Image (cartoon, rainbow, N blue to C red; front, side):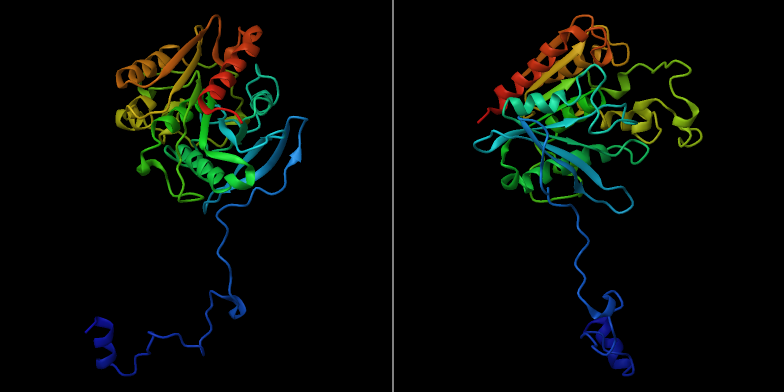
Length: 340
């Protein structure tokens, strides 16, 4: 006999709640009507033409989470595709503190990444993710894995091939796409947001000057007037502005920094990597790429390193090489993912 049944026997006046009482309205159902569950994400909707080569689904909500803003992406599709196309997820930089899915670095021509991929017959999704003061790591990785699952959920409608996904990012985005390429077989790092029941893995990674070991990044020394007071007004008192510490909740604990570092997740089943880094990067030194390359080599993972002569962060100082740098990345992704 259950505890509840025993209580009924001992107290016959106790109401029987084992069956619904239609005389008592369900206050969670206003007016007694069925209320549908709150949507976890939205369908892609109708695309708009962006150029002869591209149409775009804009402002697509790929995941909702209580207490946070909706997570958005734009999906750029090649207009001339005859069959399902490969897709690349672009991830923006900004030190995990700033940035937006629509913004490319100032050294890149506007929309160049999205346009060049489409011209090569590759779809491109560009996704927002939570910044470090919105939620500490691994929230950013969870968001981007939700974006990949969303794209697979709607692969048929978007005319994309769910088995040919890659990822490309710069700076903080390079760090995050590296993690995507290294943790495709780590369900414990998938998070619970958005669409479920799909892989969150990628088959190729292009990492532009990303951080690979947070414990080994030198302190950021910014000009005194780089961040005006209005930009930092919402930073909690006592919170460091060092991006790697802010990413893990304001801590410098070695175990937290290691847990947010791509070098901690390198295994033999990682995706192939193209690592592109300037030899004069004063913000994220080339040694960060060297550390990841060494770990990939030790694990037997396919990788290439391209060093941009004279390139600072965002390839400042190498602006005359930008066309060839972007063409290199698009060519690499085309070769690894194939095109229709």
